[in-house]
Amino acid sequence: MPSTANQPNQIKRDAGLSFISKCIATAFFAGYSPVAPGTAGSLIALLPLFFFPGIHTFILALLIIIAFIIGVWVSKKFEAALGKDPQVVVIDEVVGMWVTMLFVPITWFNLAAGFILFRFFDITKPPPARQLEELQHGWGIMLDDVAAGIYAGIVLFLITLFR
Image (cartoon, rainbow, N blue to C red; front, side, top):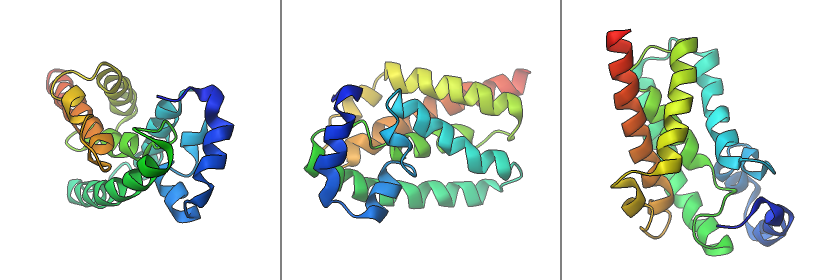
């Protein structure tokens, strides 16, 4: 995985990618954060949930599906240009964060707990997330974070049941 010290070099190497692809893959350039780009991408994912806390589960599920499909496509392009799972690609964190929040009420507590849980599972990658990461052509980039989102979502759902 490239270090954050290589961020300027990554920006130069991805110069052949379209502006739209960069916007999507990097979650509006959060992926270019010099510190913890995955965390920055996860925080960006919270913004629409914060501003639309009453979002219907169906609408959020539809957004997840659309973002996942587009995410696989742009992740494949970035993988081809920058190598395996480039740090600047954080659309996977956006999708994973939304998966985490899919079946719980959008509250301050749930947003904070969901963020912490998702980051924990995204970083630790319990099976099969670690194995999914090995898939090629953008699939691995996206699916390991979906798995982390499912784990975090289950734990968060259980917390909301007993809270």
